[in-house]
Length: 515
Image (cartoon, rainbow, N blue to C red; front, side, top):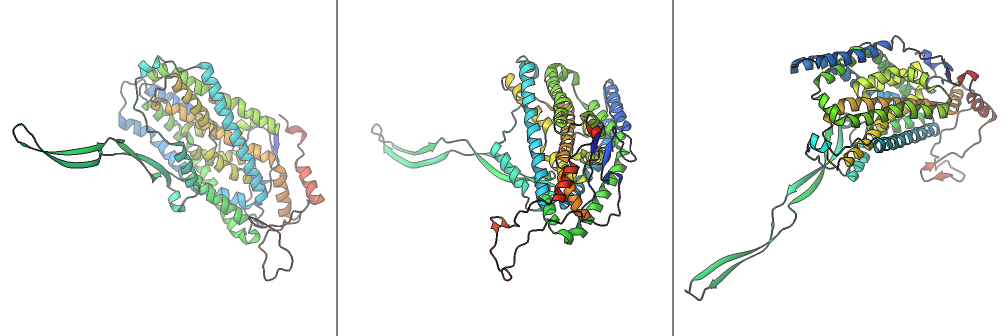
Protein backbone atom coordinates (compact mmCIF):
# COMPACT_ATOMS: atom_id res chain seq x y z
CA UNK A 1 0.00 0.00 0.00
CA UNK A 2 1.32 3.43 -0.82
CA UNK A 3 -0.06 6.95 -0.95
CA UNK A 4 0.11 9.66 -3.57
CA UNK A 5 -0.80 13.23 -2.74
CA UNK A 6 -2.86 14.22 -5.76
CA UNK A 7 -3.02 17.95 -6.53
CA UNK A 8 -6.15 19.77 -7.58
CA UNK A 9 -7.16 20.53 -11.15
CA UNK A 10 -5.62 23.09 -13.42
CA UNK A 11 -4.85 26.31 -11.51
CA UNK A 12 -5.78 28.48 -14.49
CA UNK A 13 -9.31 27.10 -14.49
CA UNK A 14 -11.48 28.29 -11.61
CA UNK A 15 -14.56 26.60 -13.00
CA UNK A 16 -14.36 22.83 -12.83
CA UNK A 17 -17.29 21.34 -14.71
CA UNK A 18 -15.41 18.10 -15.38
CA UNK A 19 -14.76 16.40 -12.09
CA UNK A 20 -12.94 13.10 -11.95
CA UNK A 21 -12.17 10.83 -9.04
CA UNK A 22 -8.43 10.96 -9.69
CA UNK A 23 -8.35 14.76 -9.22
CA UNK A 24 -8.94 14.76 -5.49
CA UNK A 25 -6.49 16.29 -3.05
CA UNK A 26 -5.23 12.94 -1.79
CA UNK A 27 -5.25 9.50 -3.23
CA UNK A 28 -4.46 6.26 -1.41
CA UNK A 29 -3.85 3.18 -3.45
CA UNK A 30 -4.47 -0.18 -1.85
CA UNK A 31 -3.21 -2.51 -4.50
CA UNK A 32 -3.94 -1.84 -8.16
CA UNK A 33 -7.24 -0.24 -9.08
CA UNK A 34 -8.78 -0.98 -12.43
CA UNK A 35 -9.25 1.77 -14.95
CA UNK A 36 -12.76 3.13 -15.02
CA UNK A 37 -14.96 0.82 -17.00
CA UNK A 38 -12.05 -1.40 -17.96
CA UNK A 39 -10.65 -4.68 -16.72
CA UNK A 40 -7.02 -5.69 -17.03
CA UNK A 41 -7.60 -9.44 -17.54
CA UNK A 42 -8.78 -9.37 -21.22
CA UNK A 43 -5.50 -7.88 -22.58
CA UNK A 44 -3.59 -10.64 -20.81
CA UNK A 45 -5.92 -13.21 -22.34
CA UNK A 46 -5.33 -11.56 -25.70
CA UNK A 47 -1.57 -12.08 -25.36
CA UNK A 48 -2.06 -15.75 -24.40
CA UNK A 49 -4.62 -16.35 -27.15
CA UNK A 50 -2.43 -14.75 -29.80
CA UNK A 51 0.62 -16.76 -28.73
CA UNK A 52 -1.27 -20.07 -28.69
CA UNK A 53 -3.00 -19.51 -32.04
CA UNK A 54 0.22 -18.31 -33.64
CA UNK A 55 2.05 -21.43 -32.46
CA UNK A 56 -0.73 -23.69 -33.75
CA UNK A 57 -0.76 -22.01 -37.15
CA UNK A 58 2.96 -22.65 -37.47
CA UNK A 59 2.22 -26.38 -37.41
CA UNK A 60 0.41 -26.11 -40.74
CA UNK A 61 2.57 -27.04 -43.75
CA UNK A 62 1.69 -23.89 -45.71
CA UNK A 63 -0.08 -20.65 -44.91
CA UNK A 64 -1.73 -18.57 -47.58
CA UNK A 65 -0.57 -14.95 -47.74
CA UNK A 66 -4.15 -13.68 -47.79
CA UNK A 67 -4.90 -15.68 -44.64
CA UNK A 68 -2.00 -13.99 -42.81
CA UNK A 69 -3.30 -10.59 -43.92
CA UNK A 70 -6.77 -11.38 -42.57
CA UNK A 71 -5.34 -12.63 -39.27
CA UNK A 72 -3.32 -9.44 -38.77
CA UNK A 73 -6.09 -7.10 -39.94
CA UNK A 74 -7.77 -6.51 -36.52
CA UNK A 75 -4.36 -5.74 -35.02
CA UNK A 76 -3.62 -3.29 -37.81
CA UNK A 77 -6.86 -1.48 -37.01
CA UNK A 78 -5.84 -1.25 -33.33
CA UNK A 79 -2.45 0.24 -34.26
CA UNK A 80 -4.11 2.79 -36.52
CA UNK A 81 -6.56 3.88 -33.83
CA UNK A 82 -3.80 4.29 -31.23
CA UNK A 83 -1.51 6.19 -33.59
CA UNK A 84 -4.43 8.40 -34.59
CA UNK A 85 -4.60 9.72 -31.02
CA UNK A 86 -0.86 10.37 -30.58
CA UNK A 87 -0.74 13.87 -32.06
CA UNK A 88 -3.82 15.39 -30.32
CA UNK A 89 -2.83 13.66 -27.07
CA UNK A 90 0.72 15.07 -27.11
CA UNK A 91 -0.51 18.58 -27.94
CA UNK A 92 -3.29 18.70 -25.35
CA UNK A 93 -1.30 17.01 -22.59
CA UNK A 94 1.83 19.14 -22.93
CA UNK A 95 0.04 22.47 -23.20
CA UNK A 96 -2.49 21.85 -20.43
CA UNK A 97 0.14 20.37 -18.13
CA UNK A 98 2.73 23.11 -18.57
CA UNK A 99 0.15 25.89 -18.45
CA UNK A 100 -0.66 24.79 -14.90
CA UNK A 101 2.96 25.11 -13.77
CA UNK A 102 5.16 28.10 -13.24
CA UNK A 103 8.45 28.12 -15.20
CA UNK A 104 10.48 27.28 -12.11
CA UNK A 105 8.43 24.18 -11.28
CA UNK A 106 8.33 22.94 -14.87
CA UNK A 107 12.09 23.43 -15.10
CA UNK A 108 12.64 21.39 -11.95
CA UNK A 109 10.38 18.58 -13.19
CA UNK A 110 12.06 18.54 -16.58
CA UNK A 111 15.50 18.38 -14.97
CA UNK A 112 14.47 15.49 -12.72
CA UNK A 113 13.00 13.61 -15.67
CA UNK A 114 16.13 14.11 -17.79
CA UNK A 115 18.41 12.96 -14.96
CA UNK A 116 16.27 9.85 -14.53
CA UNK A 117 16.19 9.08 -18.25
CA UNK A 118 19.95 9.54 -18.65
CA UNK A 119 20.73 7.44 -15.57
CA UNK A 120 18.51 4.51 -16.53
CA UNK A 121 19.77 4.52 -20.12
CA UNK A 122 23.39 4.38 -18.97
CA UNK A 123 22.57 1.60 -16.49
CA UNK A 124 20.79 -0.38 -19.22
CA UNK A 125 23.79 -0.11 -21.55
CA UNK A 126 26.20 -1.14 -18.78
CA UNK A 127 24.01 -4.12 -17.91
CA UNK A 128 23.97 -5.19 -21.55
CA UNK A 129 27.77 -4.98 -21.80
CA UNK A 130 28.22 -7.04 -18.63
CA UNK A 131 25.84 -9.76 -19.82
CA UNK A 132 27.25 -10.08 -23.33
CA UNK A 133 30.81 -10.27 -22.00
CA UNK A 134 29.80 -12.87 -19.41
CA UNK A 135 27.63 -15.12 -21.61
CA UNK A 136 29.69 -14.57 -24.80
CA UNK A 137 26.95 -15.45 -27.32
CA UNK A 138 29.07 -14.53 -30.36
CA UNK A 139 30.50 -17.90 -31.37
CA UNK A 140 32.76 -17.55 -34.47
CA UNK A 141 31.31 -20.85 -35.76
CA UNK A 142 28.09 -18.97 -36.52
CA UNK A 143 29.92 -17.23 -39.37
CA UNK A 144 29.75 -20.32 -41.57
CA UNK A 145 26.23 -21.20 -40.45
CA UNK A 146 24.66 -17.83 -41.18
CA UNK A 147 26.69 -16.68 -44.15
CA UNK A 148 27.62 -13.16 -45.14
CA UNK A 149 25.06 -10.41 -45.47
CA UNK A 150 25.33 -7.32 -47.61
CA UNK A 151 26.80 -4.49 -45.62
CA UNK A 152 24.33 -1.76 -44.84
CA UNK A 153 25.10 1.86 -45.60
CA UNK A 154 27.12 3.55 -42.90
CA UNK A 155 25.55 6.47 -41.05
CA UNK A 156 27.71 9.29 -39.76
CA UNK A 157 27.32 10.02 -36.06
CA UNK A 158 27.72 13.72 -36.79
CA UNK A 159 24.94 13.65 -39.39
CA UNK A 160 22.64 11.79 -37.00
CA UNK A 161 23.28 14.34 -34.23
CA UNK A 162 22.74 17.31 -36.56
CA UNK A 163 19.52 15.74 -37.84
CA UNK A 164 18.35 15.44 -34.24
CA UNK A 165 18.90 19.17 -33.69
CA UNK A 166 17.25 20.03 -37.02
CA UNK A 167 14.17 18.00 -36.15
CA UNK A 168 13.97 19.75 -32.78
CA UNK A 169 13.33 23.01 -34.66
CA UNK A 170 10.93 22.14 -37.51
CA UNK A 171 10.52 24.76 -40.21
CA UNK A 172 6.88 23.83 -40.75
CA UNK A 173 4.63 22.52 -37.98
CA UNK A 174 2.13 21.03 -40.40
CA UNK A 175 4.90 19.15 -42.20
CA UNK A 176 6.29 17.98 -38.84
CA UNK A 177 3.05 16.07 -38.28
CA UNK A 178 3.95 13.56 -40.99
CA UNK A 179 7.59 14.13 -42.06
CA UNK A 180 11.02 14.57 -40.51
CA UNK A 181 14.33 15.64 -42.00
CA UNK A 182 17.22 13.24 -42.58
CA UNK A 183 20.70 13.58 -44.09
CA UNK A 184 21.12 11.29 -47.10
CA UNK A 185 24.61 10.30 -48.27
CA UNK A 186 25.04 9.38 -51.92
CA UNK A 187 28.22 8.20 -53.67
CA UNK A 188 28.45 9.51 -57.24
CA UNK A 189 30.93 7.91 -59.70
CA UNK A 190 33.51 10.32 -61.05
CA UNK A 191 35.12 9.81 -64.51
CA UNK A 192 38.92 10.09 -64.79
CA UNK A 193 40.14 13.68 -65.10
CA UNK A 194 42.06 14.70 -68.25
CA UNK A 195 44.95 16.87 -67.09
CA UNK A 196 46.83 17.48 -70.44
CA UNK A 197 46.23 16.54 -74.03
CA UNK A 198 48.45 17.39 -77.07
CA UNK A 199 49.03 16.21 -80.62
CA UNK A 200 52.48 14.83 -81.61
CA UNK A 201 53.71 14.58 -85.19
CA UNK A 202 56.99 12.84 -85.99
CA UNK A 203 58.77 11.70 -89.18
CA UNK A 204 60.33 8.30 -88.81
CA UNK A 205 63.82 8.14 -90.43
CA UNK A 206 63.51 4.60 -91.79
CA UNK A 207 60.91 4.85 -94.53
CA UNK A 208 60.15 8.53 -94.23
CA UNK A 209 56.64 7.84 -92.95
CA UNK A 210 54.72 10.42 -90.95
CA UNK A 211 53.46 9.52 -87.44
CA UNK A 212 50.53 11.42 -85.98
CA UNK A 213 49.59 10.66 -82.37
CA UNK A 214 47.71 12.22 -79.45
CA UNK A 215 49.23 12.12 -75.98
CA UNK A 216 46.75 12.31 -73.11
CA UNK A 217 47.68 12.65 -69.42
CA UNK A 218 44.97 11.24 -67.14
CA UNK A 219 44.65 11.73 -63.38
CA UNK A 220 43.58 8.57 -61.52
CA UNK A 221 41.74 10.20 -58.61
CA UNK A 222 38.93 8.73 -56.48
CA UNK A 223 36.33 6.80 -58.46
CA UNK A 224 33.41 8.10 -56.37
CA UNK A 225 32.58 11.35 -54.61
CA UNK A 226 30.28 11.56 -51.57
CA UNK A 227 27.44 14.07 -51.73
CA UNK A 228 25.17 14.88 -48.78
CA UNK A 229 21.73 16.39 -48.97
CA UNK A 230 18.72 16.83 -46.72
CA UNK A 231 15.58 14.86 -47.49
CA UNK A 232 12.23 14.50 -45.77
CA UNK A 233 11.22 10.97 -44.86
CA UNK A 234 7.81 9.74 -43.82
CA UNK A 235 7.12 9.70 -40.08
CA UNK A 236 5.88 12.12 -37.46
CA UNK A 237 8.53 14.50 -36.12
CA UNK A 238 7.55 13.92 -32.49
CA UNK A 239 10.67 15.62 -31.14
CA UNK A 240 9.97 18.85 -33.00
CA UNK A 241 6.32 18.89 -31.96
CA UNK A 242 7.25 18.30 -28.33
CA UNK A 243 9.84 21.09 -28.41
CA UNK A 244 7.39 23.61 -29.86
CA UNK A 245 4.46 22.78 -27.62
CA UNK A 246 6.65 22.77 -24.50
CA UNK A 247 7.61 26.36 -25.29
CA UNK A 248 3.98 27.15 -26.15
CA UNK A 249 2.70 25.72 -22.85
CA UNK A 250 5.28 27.56 -20.75
CA UNK A 251 4.52 30.85 -22.52
CA UNK A 252 0.78 30.31 -22.07
CA UNK A 253 1.23 29.60 -18.37
CA UNK A 254 2.93 32.96 -17.93
CA UNK A 255 -0.12 34.80 -19.30
CA UNK A 256 -2.12 34.08 -16.14
CA UNK A 257 -5.82 34.92 -16.33
CA UNK A 258 -5.60 35.88 -19.99
CA UNK A 259 -4.80 32.27 -20.93
CA UNK A 260 -7.62 30.72 -18.88
CA UNK A 261 -10.01 30.17 -21.86
CA UNK A 262 -7.29 28.48 -23.90
CA UNK A 263 -6.21 26.36 -20.93
CA UNK A 264 -9.80 25.22 -20.44
CA UNK A 265 -10.00 24.32 -24.14
CA UNK A 266 -6.93 22.09 -23.99
CA UNK A 267 -8.14 20.53 -20.72
CA UNK A 268 -11.44 19.56 -22.33
CA UNK A 269 -9.60 18.31 -25.44
CA UNK A 270 -7.45 16.09 -23.25
CA UNK A 271 -10.53 14.69 -21.50
CA UNK A 272 -12.13 13.88 -24.86
CA UNK A 273 -9.00 12.10 -26.07
CA UNK A 274 -8.84 10.01 -22.89
CA UNK A 275 -12.50 9.10 -23.33
CA UNK A 276 -11.69 7.86 -26.83
CA UNK A 277 -8.84 5.82 -25.35
CA UNK A 278 -11.33 4.17 -22.99
CA UNK A 279 -13.44 3.14 -25.96
CA UNK A 280 -10.42 1.73 -27.81
CA UNK A 281 -9.36 -0.30 -24.77
CA UNK A 282 -12.46 -2.47 -25.06
CA UNK A 283 -11.23 -3.52 -28.49
CA UNK A 284 -7.56 -3.90 -27.50
CA UNK A 285 -7.65 -7.62 -26.46
CA UNK A 286 -8.76 -8.65 -29.96
CA UNK A 287 -6.22 -6.37 -31.61
CA UNK A 288 -3.33 -7.56 -29.43
CA UNK A 289 -4.21 -11.21 -30.07
CA UNK A 290 -4.35 -10.51 -33.80
CA UNK A 291 -0.97 -8.75 -33.84
CA UNK A 292 0.86 -11.47 -31.94
CA UNK A 293 -0.80 -14.32 -33.83
CA UNK A 294 -0.06 -12.77 -37.22
CA UNK A 295 3.58 -12.07 -36.41
CA UNK A 296 4.26 -15.54 -35.02
CA UNK A 297 2.50 -17.29 -37.88
CA UNK A 298 4.36 -15.24 -40.49
CA UNK A 299 7.89 -15.78 -39.17
CA UNK A 300 10.10 -17.80 -41.49
CA UNK A 301 12.57 -20.42 -40.21
CA UNK A 302 12.01 -19.53 -36.56
CA UNK A 303 13.45 -22.84 -35.38
CA UNK A 304 16.62 -22.35 -37.45
CA UNK A 305 17.10 -18.84 -36.08
CA UNK A 306 16.55 -20.10 -32.53
CA UNK A 307 19.29 -22.71 -32.99
CA UNK A 308 21.76 -20.29 -34.57
CA UNK A 309 21.11 -17.17 -32.50
CA UNK A 310 19.55 -18.70 -29.40
CA UNK A 311 22.26 -17.48 -27.01
CA UNK A 312 22.06 -13.99 -28.48
CA UNK A 313 18.29 -13.86 -28.01
CA UNK A 314 18.69 -15.23 -24.49
CA UNK A 315 21.24 -12.54 -23.61
CA UNK A 316 18.98 -9.73 -24.80
CA UNK A 317 15.89 -11.17 -23.09
CA UNK A 318 17.78 -11.73 -19.82
CA UNK A 319 19.11 -8.18 -19.87
CA UNK A 320 15.68 -6.68 -20.47
CA UNK A 321 14.19 -8.86 -17.74
CA UNK A 322 16.83 -7.85 -15.18
CA UNK A 323 16.52 -4.17 -16.06
CA UNK A 324 12.72 -4.17 -15.88
CA UNK A 325 12.29 -6.46 -12.86
CA UNK A 326 15.32 -5.45 -10.77
CA UNK A 327 17.03 -2.18 -11.75
CA UNK A 328 13.97 0.02 -12.31
CA UNK A 329 12.07 -1.24 -9.21
CA UNK A 330 15.18 -0.69 -7.05
CA UNK A 331 15.52 2.89 -8.30
CA UNK A 332 11.83 3.52 -7.66
CA UNK A 333 11.99 2.06 -4.15
CA UNK A 334 15.21 3.91 -3.33
CA UNK A 335 13.68 7.27 -4.23
CA UNK A 336 10.06 6.89 -3.08
CA UNK A 337 10.26 4.13 -0.42
CA UNK A 338 7.08 2.66 -1.92
CA UNK A 339 6.20 -0.78 -3.20
CA UNK A 340 7.34 -1.05 -6.85
CA UNK A 341 5.35 -4.23 -7.46
CA UNK A 342 2.09 -2.47 -6.61
CA UNK A 343 3.17 0.18 -9.11
CA UNK A 344 3.82 -2.59 -11.63
CA UNK A 345 0.29 -3.87 -11.11
CA UNK A 346 -1.08 -0.42 -11.90
CA UNK A 347 0.71 -0.22 -15.26
CA UNK A 348 0.11 -3.86 -16.20
CA UNK A 349 -2.32 -2.96 -18.97
CA UNK A 350 0.13 -0.48 -20.54
CA UNK A 351 2.88 -3.13 -20.41
CA UNK A 352 0.68 -5.66 -22.21
CA UNK A 353 -0.27 -3.10 -24.85
CA UNK A 354 3.41 -2.32 -25.46
CA UNK A 355 4.15 -6.04 -25.69
CA UNK A 356 1.50 -6.47 -28.35
CA UNK A 357 1.97 -3.28 -30.40
CA UNK A 358 5.79 -2.84 -30.13
CA UNK A 359 5.26 0.95 -30.16
CA UNK A 360 6.03 3.27 -27.24
CA UNK A 361 4.16 6.15 -28.88
CA UNK A 362 1.20 3.92 -29.70
CA UNK A 363 1.04 2.82 -26.05
CA UNK A 364 1.16 6.42 -24.80
CA UNK A 365 -2.65 6.86 -24.44
CA UNK A 366 -2.89 3.68 -22.36
CA UNK A 367 0.08 4.71 -20.20
CA UNK A 368 -1.56 8.06 -19.45
CA UNK A 369 -4.74 6.32 -18.42
CA UNK A 370 -3.14 3.74 -16.15
CA UNK A 371 -0.86 6.21 -14.33
CA UNK A 372 -3.59 8.78 -13.71
CA UNK A 373 -6.53 6.50 -12.93
CA UNK A 374 -4.83 3.44 -11.45
CA UNK A 375 -2.00 5.08 -9.51
CA UNK A 376 -3.23 8.64 -9.03
CA UNK A 377 -0.10 10.27 -10.45
CA UNK A 378 -0.62 14.00 -10.87
CA UNK A 379 -1.81 14.81 -14.37
CA UNK A 380 0.58 17.74 -14.66
CA UNK A 381 3.46 15.33 -14.14
CA UNK A 382 2.27 12.71 -16.61
CA UNK A 383 1.52 15.32 -19.25
CA UNK A 384 5.08 16.61 -19.06
CA UNK A 385 7.08 13.43 -18.43
CA UNK A 386 5.38 10.79 -20.60
CA UNK A 387 5.49 12.51 -24.04
CA UNK A 388 9.18 13.30 -23.56
CA UNK A 389 9.91 9.82 -22.22
CA UNK A 390 8.18 8.11 -25.15
CA UNK A 391 10.55 9.98 -27.47
CA UNK A 392 13.95 9.98 -25.77
CA UNK A 393 13.83 7.36 -23.00
CA UNK A 394 14.94 4.13 -24.69
CA UNK A 395 16.35 1.86 -21.98
CA UNK A 396 15.52 -1.30 -23.90
CA UNK A 397 17.08 0.06 -27.08
CA UNK A 398 20.27 1.06 -25.28
CA UNK A 399 20.62 -2.41 -23.77
CA UNK A 400 19.95 -4.12 -27.09
CA UNK A 401 22.41 -1.93 -29.02
CA UNK A 402 25.16 -2.62 -26.49
CA UNK A 403 24.59 -6.38 -26.73
CA UNK A 404 24.34 -6.33 -30.54
CA UNK A 405 27.55 -4.34 -31.03
CA UNK A 406 29.68 -6.64 -28.88
CA UNK A 407 27.96 -9.72 -30.29
CA UNK A 408 28.98 -8.73 -33.82
CA UNK A 409 32.49 -7.95 -32.63
CA UNK A 410 32.70 -11.42 -31.10
CA UNK A 411 31.86 -12.87 -34.50
CA UNK A 412 34.75 -11.03 -36.19
CA UNK A 413 32.55 -8.10 -37.26
CA UNK A 414 30.30 -10.22 -39.47
CA UNK A 415 26.93 -8.48 -39.87
CA UNK A 416 24.00 -10.83 -39.27
CA UNK A 417 20.50 -10.58 -40.61
CA UNK A 418 18.44 -9.83 -37.51
CA UNK A 419 15.12 -9.48 -39.28
CA UNK A 420 13.85 -12.85 -38.07
CA UNK A 421 14.28 -11.96 -34.41
CA UNK A 422 13.03 -8.37 -34.73
CA UNK A 423 9.49 -9.35 -33.71
CA UNK A 424 10.48 -10.69 -30.29
CA UNK A 425 13.23 -8.13 -29.76
CA UNK A 426 11.13 -5.04 -30.53
CA UNK A 427 8.26 -6.12 -28.29
CA UNK A 428 10.51 -6.85 -25.33
CA UNK A 429 12.48 -3.64 -25.49
CA UNK A 430 9.35 -1.54 -26.15
CA UNK A 431 7.71 -2.98 -23.04
CA UNK A 432 10.80 -2.05 -21.00
CA UNK A 433 10.73 1.48 -22.46
CA UNK A 434 7.11 1.92 -21.36
CA UNK A 435 7.86 0.56 -17.88
CA UNK A 436 10.80 2.96 -17.58
CA UNK A 437 8.63 5.93 -18.61
CA UNK A 438 6.01 4.97 -16.04
CA UNK A 439 8.49 4.60 -13.19
CA UNK A 440 9.99 7.94 -14.20
CA UNK A 441 6.60 9.64 -13.92
CA UNK A 442 6.10 8.12 -10.46
CA UNK A 443 9.54 9.28 -9.28
CA UNK A 444 9.11 12.82 -10.66
CA UNK A 445 5.66 12.97 -9.04
CA UNK A 446 7.12 11.97 -5.68
CA UNK A 447 9.96 14.51 -5.87
CA UNK A 448 7.68 17.34 -7.05
CA UNK A 449 4.89 17.05 -4.47
CA UNK A 450 5.99 20.12 -2.53
CA UNK A 451 5.98 22.35 -5.60
CA UNK A 452 2.65 20.99 -6.82
CA UNK A 453 1.05 21.53 -3.41
CA UNK A 454 2.34 25.11 -3.34
CA UNK A 455 0.83 25.79 -6.77
CA UNK A 456 -2.49 24.31 -5.64
CA UNK A 457 -2.47 26.44 -2.49
CA UNK A 458 -1.90 29.56 -4.58
CA UNK A 459 -4.73 28.53 -6.93
CA UNK A 460 -7.09 28.23 -3.92
CA UNK A 461 -6.03 31.62 -2.61
CA UNK A 462 -4.27 30.26 0.48
CA UNK A 463 -1.00 31.78 -0.68
CA UNK A 464 -0.34 35.05 -2.50
CA UNK A 465 0.19 34.76 -6.23
CA UNK A 466 3.75 35.04 -7.45
CA UNK A 467 4.13 38.20 -9.52
CA UNK A 468 4.50 37.49 -13.22
CA UNK A 469 7.64 39.14 -14.59
CA UNK A 470 6.76 41.95 -16.98
CA UNK A 471 8.88 44.17 -19.15
CA UNK A 472 8.93 47.64 -17.58
CA UNK A 473 7.79 50.61 -19.60
CA UNK A 474 10.68 52.97 -20.25
CA UNK A 475 8.32 55.94 -20.37
CA UNK A 476 6.96 55.33 -16.87
CA UNK A 477 10.18 54.03 -15.35
CA UNK A 478 11.70 56.15 -12.61
CA UNK A 479 14.21 53.89 -10.91
CA UNK A 480 17.08 51.62 -11.88
CA UNK A 481 16.28 48.53 -13.89
CA UNK A 482 17.26 45.06 -12.75
CA UNK A 483 17.82 42.70 -15.64
CA UNK A 484 19.67 39.74 -16.98
CA UNK A 485 20.83 38.73 -20.40
CA UNK A 486 17.53 36.93 -20.97
CA UNK A 487 15.38 39.95 -20.09
CA UNK A 488 14.09 41.80 -17.06
CA UNK A 489 13.31 39.63 -14.07
CA UNK A 490 11.72 40.13 -10.70
CA UNK A 491 14.02 40.14 -7.71
CA UNK A 492 13.80 36.91 -5.69
CA UNK A 493 11.65 37.04 -2.59
CA UNK A 494 11.76 34.80 0.44
CA UNK A 495 9.00 32.28 0.94
CA UNK A 496 6.37 33.23 3.46
CA UNK A 497 5.86 31.23 6.65
CA UNK A 498 2.51 29.98 5.35
CA UNK A 499 4.11 28.69 2.15
CA UNK A 500 6.83 26.92 4.11
CA UNK A 501 4.13 25.33 6.30
CA UNK A 502 2.27 24.02 3.22
CA UNK A 503 5.49 22.56 1.84
CA UNK A 504 6.35 20.85 5.09
CA UNK A 505 2.86 19.37 5.37
CA UNK A 506 2.81 18.03 1.82
CA UNK A 507 6.20 16.38 2.25
CA UNK A 508 5.09 14.36 5.29
CA UNK A 509 4.37 10.79 4.25
CA UNK A 510 1.66 8.83 6.03
CA UNK A 511 2.80 5.94 8.18
CA UNK A 512 1.20 3.37 5.89
CA UNK A 513 3.02 4.59 2.77
CA UNK A 514 6.03 2.32 3.19
CA UNK A 515 6.02 -0.92 1.25
